[in-house]
Length: 322
Image (tube, rainbow, N blue to C red):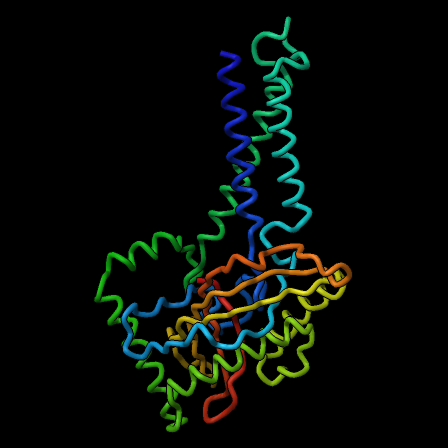
């Protein structure tokens, strides 16, 4: 019985260690691979997923020149660097303790070393608490709010969207076209393809500015709120003396997924799908401290741009994860 419990504890600790390692594998990019900024009244809603076979999808070659990259701000992660290190260390300590005791070293606090000792109980409670924290944190990532403030489980929403099939795709495209028609009423020269091209230009410029840790050249492309957020991330990079790099970017597609007007502002959200090399180096040693110089990562992000209604310059106001 005692041997079986110890085997269970060891397997649980191994599982927790793997989950912790996966949680640490966050990729930076501009915005640190997290959601940020303002989408007006839709800030608490998930961006509408674009139709999978939209005739307006813009394709980009894998040879697209690669810009620079950002760094993930530790303070904005679900659990900061210290928290994850503590969790990983604790899981490792639990696993080490299990293996040490399973080999017969060290007695339990139970009589004669039989049964479940106090140390076993503490380990079990610790594992249970860590698993609970992991589940709660991931559940919170799956939840959002709709316009009325009601909590919406995004995994249920996505499953429902899939079951809707072609109807939902057609409805989503119709909503995009309706939103674009309102924008064209005040700006007859607006063209979706040219807009998508300008989004890609902004994407590369902002990524390059992030790697250089200097936003002065892209200030006109950012809202005040987005500039403040990104500058905070850059300040963290400078303090930690690190540079986050993006290389070999291949943008697979860019597509308008939402378009609307509110409070005298135009809003357009674009889905960007790409893959790239994403890693962070130390300024002093040049060593890679996170990410990989050889293993590419894929990502989908929703970039929202806004402007005063009419033929005015667009500015990035939000980045949301798919």
